[in-house]
Image (tube, rainbow, N blue to C red; front, side, top):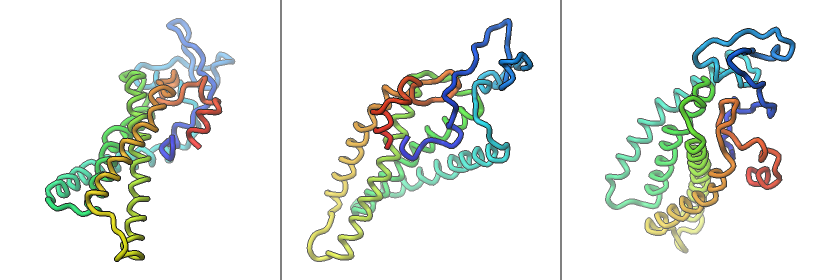
Length: 220
């Protein structure tokens, strides 16, 4: 996804070996018969994950995700509550409200999904429909934040360099924010088709579409 794909989601395109109740093997030694029988629990879902990363990197990544949830959820919720009480909002107030809302949605939905994928429990309790929705929401929130910050830059430029010519009024700011949200929600709609739960235990682009020219162009 655009700027939203976690480092732990760079899985190999090779599908894991099929497993049944009579022969369970794990790791890269599965082909030569030297694998060991898996244990019950989250390890079963984690068997299909291919990436080779140091343990400290994995722990640091999980800590950052947990920290983003612990700080981001109450922080953005308080911001929304505080700015929602302002009666005569300025254009800057509207920008802050929208950014806080998108960040809160990301902290509540996308970050937990990364954690569940990494811990190997996502595939057990999720559905492809949920995967599609989370991917669409993630794409939308990231793009909305980017465009809102671009709008803030334009607003600051106008106020500083063309103070007496034209300004973005609060009403215009609210309308522009609405246009940005609706437009990016529509542009993120392909996520509802191209994403699904893969057998490796992650929510990613469908394997047949990963080399599709249109899909690559969409993310570039």
